[in-house]
Image 1 (tube, rainbow, N blue to C red):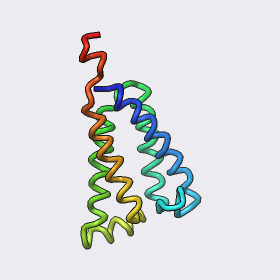
Image 2: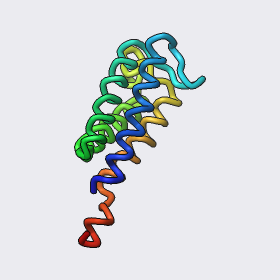
Image 3: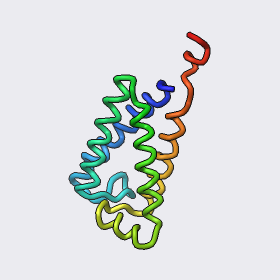
Image 4: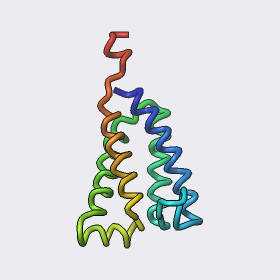
Length: 122
């Protein structure tokens, strides 16, 4: 189960660190994703955790946690009342909400993909 998740964790971790650092100096990254100081710091911390767990070969728990977290934030952005709170705290726009839902779903999927070498008994 680990290979797909470990690779994903390192890649998404690098993306989150880059986005977080960029977000420390700009309210919009990659031209469409809104952020703020709190959001940027969370992404840097999550990114470092993803890179570290992926390199150690132990990213399954990270992928599950990240998947649940991102799906929750993405979905809650569309809930009246709660969505406004998500915007105030994290400056999550519609594009960020959709990216969160997609990445969260992928994180959960890769956390359950079996490692072919283990399945084949290698």
